[in-house]
Image (cartoon, rainbow, N blue to C red; front, side):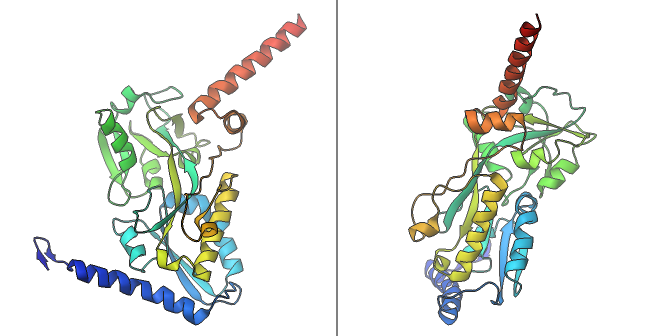
Length: 309
């Protein structure tokens, strides 16, 4: 079918293409049978994710994967605007993303994440939290995800009738952090990505404006591989790694429900420290955790001073 942009498949052609993409995993499962032993299996997985996901899961996931499945190779490739289509067409096995997959794919939430702002140490914004006024005043370095920028942030600002000025657009979270020193840019990152720089003297981490809500971080795959033993093993490995990384496990996951049902939910865990204890057990927001801890500490010091008197 000819269009302004060139030739595209007809609706029938798209349906045939989708059906053909389902055949390879089904044939692999048929030839392999129900038994799957990662220690003896041969094969290859291709996973699409951001550099944040690679740095978050990689230190635990990759050594474990290579140890348990010595005959299976793993390719990790960056996200692009074609990533969901790649999974649907069978050229990638799994996506790890903070963008919920379209309904044509299976989706499972591994944990819930929220935003934090990373700033250069000498940035004019000096508080523990970036106000919305400051957020829309200073220019931002934007991480371009799936060809959509940081759509979740932009959509929420649109709801308020606001826009943030963009100074630079980069493809990776690590690149966003690297360009900050020497500028007055703000990087809005997943909290765990921002806290990776908390001990670096070149940076300062501040809570994001209150209007930016948390978001699910999870995995997506094509429905035809729901029952594939190798793919189920890969998803289980991802799930177990997420539990180790976040300290909390999914309440439900799709594999326990025959590939259908509610999305798994994982409570987030702050980096270990007093504020994280307050956050985990008192249920306050990350931005409020530090304040709660300061009040508790002040109260304890006041009691000690009264005892000395």
